[in-house]
Image (cartoon, chains in turn green, blue):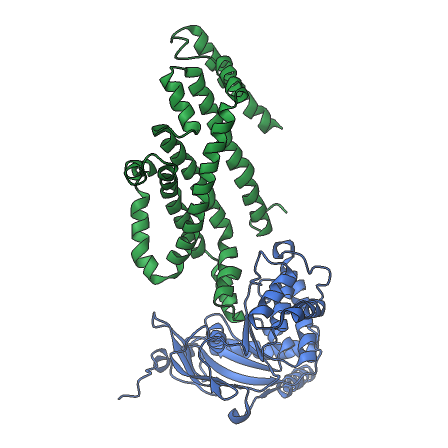
Length: 253
Length: 302
């Protein structure tokens, strides 16, 4: 209860500061609108459906790219952890590419795929697949050696070992990796959408800039923050907490 | 005074009668260990010239202080450690690696944390190729045998330490290996739970007459459970005594004869543990020069 009061108090304080600054007249009200203006713009966009359709478009794109990332990243991480060739040859490549910010792939993607959805999908996949693979590898390597030994004495091997011991044992770590991959994907998506007309949230931001509509820019930023928090807190946090509880990793029962 | 001494001597005699050297014909042994030696990569000699034969249905306790190689010996039996010398055979066949005829139980329960108690057992049964429709009934039978009825669907982290160990024991028994190997399985339990587990294991052993090799450093535990107690000494790890315990089962920790035997065994262990220089009188048997033992050469040269 106290925690919530502090949280809400902080938000209220920031809003008040924002409102105060915009009213003080240091900056032009066109460039620095107050929260009320921004809220109006947000409501207006929500009403005429621009916000809804842009959000749907962005999230649809994101989910396709993310599914692709997961279906490549998790097996890749598993192979890197278990197969010597992948550990020796593929892992350095993965680590090297991880150093490249995902948006750097966009020029190449535009040349390869043109101004299409595929270009953005490519950027998002490149942005998240490697971090998912690395987190999966870490989780698999971090499997309790006791469980590996007991599996061996029980005669668990082959696919049963992979799907019955290795994957479930690494699952909490893998989910953490999926969360990380999601936030990377979300960033890459918006960066990609900003740079060319795409009908997503990124485009709403660019439109706001072109029309000098600062309230719209700020309103879309707020929307992006809210969606990001919602997915992270509601989806991943719930799954992670449940998993950790079932696996007995949290103290609370 | 004299009478008291005489009484003590009588007691000592009786404990000797209950503890007699074991002689097992290697040809008729279930497990046969011959000239086993193991040296770790860092040149530490964990085992030196260990010979041990175990008959079917025996409950053998490997007893000794830490560092005497008892766990290494057990791991070599399980196939988790490849010994650097000598042979381990079961039913006359040399073993290489873990096999379905043996099962190793660890100090920790080592249950799969995402599976329920029943799930842990059925998963192990599936790995051993038991048909799907038999697994559940068999799991429930063994859950009942270790008195965990009502906890079939509990997750491991919801159980106490003793219950986890019982679940682990049920899993091991359900798999039904010819030989059960146990590495200080009750070492991490509190004293009271440990006694419960010992009594449970004893009653299960009396029913199933399974061949069990049990590692412990607890003298009372070894004498309470074992039909045979194999005493080991460190530096290098070796077998110093192989004794049969002639005390009828079920045994009780409070049994005066058991306490007396424990005293005798402790004296023996202490005797072998301290370096020879501190002993003015040489040990009665197998007094080997320590220098020669520290560097056993596996090469027949020279």
